[in-house]
Length: 309
Image (tube, rainbow, N blue to C red):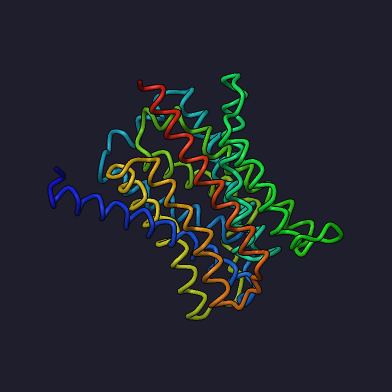
């Protein structure tokens, strides 16, 4: 029988995972607000998000495991992997996502990015030379139908979003897949705060010469400052921290499944706050892609259980 304390702890883990997903979803809508109404440049915003968020996480890592924070720099191969993660993982996933938002809206960009887990499954199927299981075939079909409905509203003649928005949304999904796969080896050796913190900070610094973050952009008022602060603190640092904490309590599979709330949060807030037009076909496409995430998560959990048996 589960003790009340254990039950309460599990509930707190569930709440933290959902809260992290909601924070991430709202962060995308805040970015859309800054792009549309405050004339912020996506690349400039990404650069500052990476630098400030990374700096906070590195400092946080130092307060937790100071030795672990700098240990990665003593191993040249791990340093190279970290640099690759910083540029090809962290910068690419952030920039493609934010740029996709600037071309469409937070809801559409977030949902398109969430087709990324399907690419992760495809990568491991090829790597391990195995045919996808039934749930993965179903996920592929649902993801394709969901994306089709989202970008065409069921019409074969036209797109309801620009070709650029679709392209950058797909690139965002590819970047998310790389971001998920590439640092797995590093995360077995170093803490997630260390890898993510250094990845963000180094990525932001490498991106700086191209974005010139020292040149202030956009219309700065209380609304802009609030949205910018939210993206850095709640959309990056706090969301990351509480999500990792939830993983230690309820496990990675359950926590990842609950993250499917993020597209719903992005869509809901964008509709209510920014008046984004999200019709029945958009919601149906979103539902199909969310079911994709559920099926992939369940199939991954079942495969893990079979391997352990």
